[in-house]
Length: 163
Image (tube, rainbow, N blue to C red; front, side):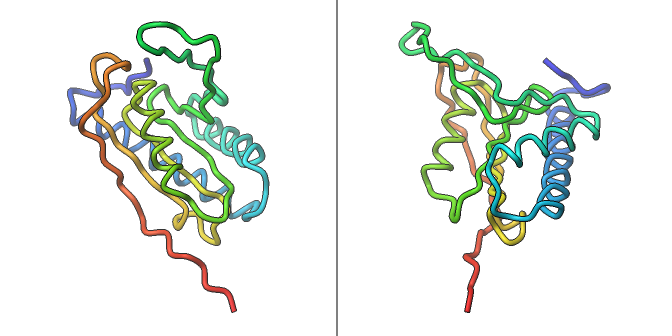
């Protein structure tokens, strides 16, 4: 697992996560400014992967994870949109409105795959910040054990008013 140089304890790890998410958000804003809304999720994924790579981050796109149910491995592997530096899940959407199911989905992914932080990014908004949600969870010692300390850190996503 990737560890930042000099990271010590929870404070160092938290600082590293904040730096990674700051870079992801900056890169996503750059992609959104260049392309605008209205394209397919796969286009945004590829461009964001390239932008993050140029900024020195390790990106795994469409990373396959095995799913376990009651201790048994399920044949179907699950693919996450993007995992950055082995620590931050990035789930990309290009939809008119984020729905509560999208938020539930990312919380499930964080719990199932033992990742501490996730970003849900909707590129279909007029401004990217309006479509951004940050999720934090305390990771249990085993990914198969649900975490009880999950919280959503969010920017309000006002609906665009059109005349």
